[in-house]
Amino acid sequence: MLIHIQIRISIAVLGSLSTLVASYLARTRGTSEPESSLLREQALSNFIRKLRAFILDRGMEEGHDQAVENFRKEFERLLNASDPNTKKPPLFDPELKIE
Image (cartoon, rainbow, N blue to C red):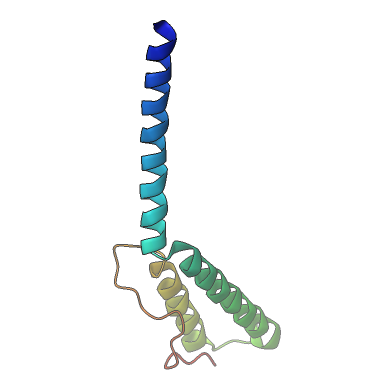
């Protein structure tokens, strides 16, 4: 009799766990999390590449306040893209000019 009760409890616990896992997977699929993480990683890698190129080309010169400001704005935009409570801007902004 005790074994039957243990089996019933085990089945109920496993059923609950499978329901929780299924709901989590459905939620991540609905938010397209894997795809957005890959896009975010690519955008950040591209930003780092552009920033390193700028530092190598013009890093020791003075008078690049506007370019530094554009880099700062782009970085903030990329960070805000990962916040689920903010409006999602595109990961690539063609109007943002970095000189």
